Image (tube, rainbow over the protein chains, first blue to last red):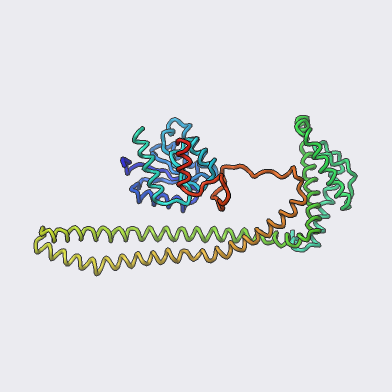
Length: 131
Length: 281
């Protein structure tokens, strides 16, 4: 895995517990440079401040949901290259298709395991390496 | 309102509401609901007749509805809203009568008084589960470094013992290693495993919410079932077929609680991956 352990993550979820879990899992995988945002709007502000290289986001959040965040990221020239991994409880097929069409880099349904997160991250890093 | 638990009081309350609304209905409301056509009194039979006529008018008016809306002059929204309130009042009256006839009024008044209680109970569940999650995460935060220390200490000693077996260590170093190993086994190791054990117990104890939330949730589920059964039978009797709409289509549904028999949802990560693969993503 060619991923830089200093890579800066933004974890977006309205539940602090879930942010903490994802942060801990990322730490286990060697990524300690993690910031958090509690909804899409706050995430966007932080992203526009610059310095982030990876976004992990929930879907269902107040103020701005994860799909809108993803669409906004893809429509913003300075952010559109960012990998966006969705971790969500939304399990309808149309959700998954909508996320893929909006340009999600990966889609994980909750509840998920540490193994799944690791696998999806590696897959995304591989693709990033090829690009 | 203090009268919610008593059926007679409820009766009186509905009568007073219906009475309040009747004069409004007598005004010539501009449209789209031509309520004023029926002569209105406070009498329940007339109300029933009025409701029927309104229902009929509404059905008939549906076809012309777009035109009506366009012609509606700006600034005349209040009469329209009154018409809406008026209709709601009558529907409430009708619902109340139907409930009474079916014997659901008692059940519903019990349910209504139980709803604030259910809200409190759900808040309690949310609170307890959040506390439990925090306790568990705190415990792992404390236990992880302990386990890491044990692993690192054991690995360091093990590497030095490997050197002993490879004859790479002098007598002095060997003695030091023996002393350190003893200290590790007698001191650090039991201390850290004890610490880890304490956190495992903490994690176990944090699950005590399940007993409490389980009881609370069972109560709320039974309340919801009563409410659903009561309201569904009433609605099925009151609701015209045309008002029965399909399932609301939305992308924010939360977790799938019961996927049995559903083809529109995935149940695990494998299915997500398969779906994305099949679409070429």
